[in-house]
Image (cartoon, rainbow over all chains, first blue to last red):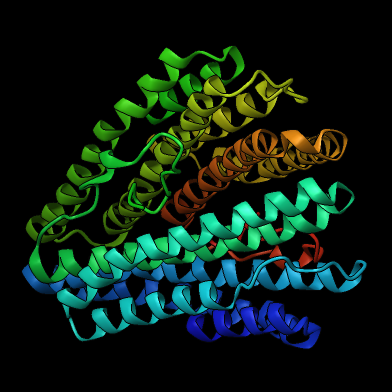
Length: 213
Length: 213
């Protein structure tokens, strides 16, 4: 459902399709309900079966991934809300193509979940690496949007909505990276998060996905 | 430590103090380490003591709050990085006062943690309500920054950094709200998240703090 929400939100954006956007907004409530259910299930499993070792790790990973999935759903909903806003204002030329960035974000989410289901840590390592590609795409898009704002300051408000769409897509990638790191921890028992993050230059944003970009 | 990081990051911003900003960036690694330790401790407690009922709820809440705290640390670090950027570029007039928003965000974080430690769900309910105030502050600041961009488009890049500082402060409030909701769940066994969020107008962003604004 979360993968679908992301795909639909991006399709809504690219095609300026209000109906699709509304669908994403409406269906988020179902994702929210599922998060609550999954957490309750985890609590029950912990209480009734008292798992240890690998099984316990799996449940802890699921508790955290569950949280991240719901947040990805919110990001998709936010993008959809941007589309509803854009549909109401004057047509503004979109100075960037969000499609490839969206495909990259979606793909990372999909593979992070595949890695979880298949307990495939090498796939998870790949997702971590791909996050750099997504960050680069976000930077390029942001530069273009800032240039558009400088050229057409009267469209600042609308262009800022596009700016935050790119940010949302990047944050989805960060959350897919979180999921991937939880999978690696689950499979390898190795806490990879917070490794290598000190190499970031000062002007590069640390993502709130557990300190990893 | 996270509360301190937030306070220091904001002081660095308001006073344009590069040394303070550097301190926040450097100390984030310690917060990251603590997150890993807390999660390991939770795993050990679950495996060795197999807690049930209220104790189990507490451990689940701590696992999630631990995650959110680390992300708040990242947000403080991001604000500090913005300060390091601002220190390098031409002096630009900051068109807004971040202080009251920062105080509000910090206060919410503090009270959400007090609510956890004291298992005080009424304090947690208050934190949830205060998030609306913080969101309003963010909206006002964002409007002012957009006006400044329209007036001085050549300063777009720098003004956008300030825009995201406000966004970061808002997200800290969202995370404090997450913590508060985990406390309420822990104390009352009631899942309050995802309640009342459908009242949001379309132009208002859904926060990725578990769907609650």
